[in-house]
Amino acid sequence: MSRARNLFLVAGAVIAGCFLPGMAMAAQDSDRGEQWEFYIPINYYGSQSFDREGGTTLDINGDIGWGFGFGYNLNDHLNLGFEFTWTDTSYDAFINSELDPDFTVGGTLEANTGQFVAQYNFTNKTVTPFVTAGIGWTYVDSNIPNAPPQSGCWWDPWYGYICTSWQPTATDTGFSYSVSAGLRFEVTDTFYFEGAYKVAWIDFDSADTMDFDGYRFDIGWRF
Image (cartoon, rainbow, N blue to C red):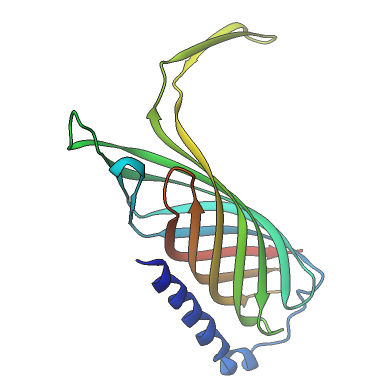
């Protein structure tokens, strides 16, 4: 899915959220202002294909990711916070090689993202449409070995002399940012959940900007 289409879908979700007055008016007034929140985000991103430098292509399968986050409601409309999410998903990489033009590798890609997030709730009701924006960094481990195995030893006061080995793998870190739009439901004074459509981007030095789109469901608590 192209980036332009992603932005169009997000904009459409925001506009649709603004035209939900019946549901918002039927809801009660919220008292979330000046309260903290802790939440567990569940993200689903669909399959995507990307072109890397040198003619290599990367096909990433869709999967579910998890995480945790916290924020503070400055008032009934604006929330500022931080979240950390991670996902493990399978992939196939088609590497452009002079020795083997059809060389293919597959494995599991690990992505960890930390972002500062800001959420704007359109109404002060317990049911309200919202938009969220995030900015931070994403660390990706391809789990593809890129150096010989290494070993190290140390002294542990409980178990004595310990030696272990590990395999360096290809990793990368990129600037990441995201936007989402959805609907928030405050079930009780302390419990709420949110559903949203989300688009995320990751900028790597060795590849074009990678963009993902999918859905998000948050389970949260206020205190």
